[in-house]
Length: 529
Ligand code: MSP
Image (cartoon, rainbow, N blue to C red; front, side, top):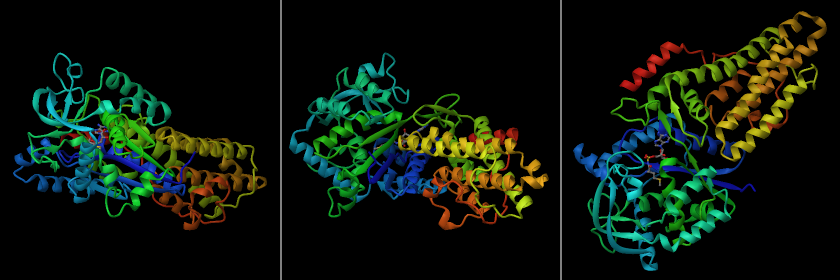
């Protein structure tokens, strides 16, 4: 059942390093979903932010000769710029160093302590400084390597507060059973149960004394709250939970008419799918409706890392190819939910094949033909005239249905493929109807007019379906087709033929064909920088 409103979040990013294309992946795909929902008329609140505490930040700030706050302020500036360059349409940006967040985390800690869900104990375990995570013997294996980043872990022992996970394991498993769509893709749930819960879930260490850059625990200020309880709370502190202004919280979290969706990368599933629901249960709050786990965007030689010199910085890519091409590549190349690899070759190929040859070329040919045969006026819709009109209309109808069903299910890549069906069918339709031959036959002018109308309408529909991805190009497509502002509405795609009797305005080629070898070299040079 579709809800009235949507609350959609990305994880909040660590300001410990520059964001790379893998980070941009998560936020861009979330943005596509948020834009799609808004396009369909839903109210949608989209949150992202920065996760600013922890030992690693304290250490990096010291190395940079700055206070941790100054250090993160500088890096977060870069986040703002990147999200702006990618046209990310977030409604809020939460920083865990903001007062509005700190107070909530401290209050939550106190409430859990009072309830008996938190106790003081001693922690001894394998600690990965880079991931700021403790791991068990089985998880680090015989070589004592962090299962997330692969770096060596060290043993650590200190007095610490723990969250009593045992109080909530049965409730969590029941919640999974009762809500089979909570954690997607399905395989992630099995991974949580078999890898983390069944082997025996330990209580979660939620405080540290070995560094001070964190939110102090009021009851025992030598402890700072360990990063995950701090970080996860952002999803509700940003909405004004536990504040004098809980309006957004009531509207987007507690109200069952709102669908709450967290989107996150596979490396942080356990924190979102196990501990976060437990924290919320402890606070007697509603749980999110869905958590969608996407795969990681890697390089051919594994994870992106500065030392390997394979980090892809999204800024120069956006500068050279435009925001639409970068967003399109991210959403289309790697199926959302699966792991994938970035290669310069595939980047260029994807833009050339889908955007330059297929969509761009279709628009170009259509506008040129309308110019040539009808002095730029798109003929009015006259029903199904040629033998192929019905087929194209059916493809459009089917694609819209597919696209909506897939996108509602967060199958973003598959939804784009469904939208592209219209583009490829329209290109095929040109070959089938051979407008250049119709133009020569005075008896076929009605057919020719119908072909031009069908092409314009097919492009309008495809442009609308791709609008959440092609944030600037879709409007340029509509401009070239002469479509007025008031017709640029999503609901108009259901009425094939709505576009007609308007004058096209031939513009520049939206996606000029890229020279494969020149561009591959250019991207490789960006990576070396
Ligand atoms: N700060 C935590 C999240 C706390 S949420 C309460 C964190 N930050 S992160 O900066 O390391 O990652 C932010 C997001 O980017 C995560 O969803 C992570 O999975 C995603 N990605 C980081 N590298 C990625 C790729 N190479 N590919 C795809 N997504 C990637 O984790």
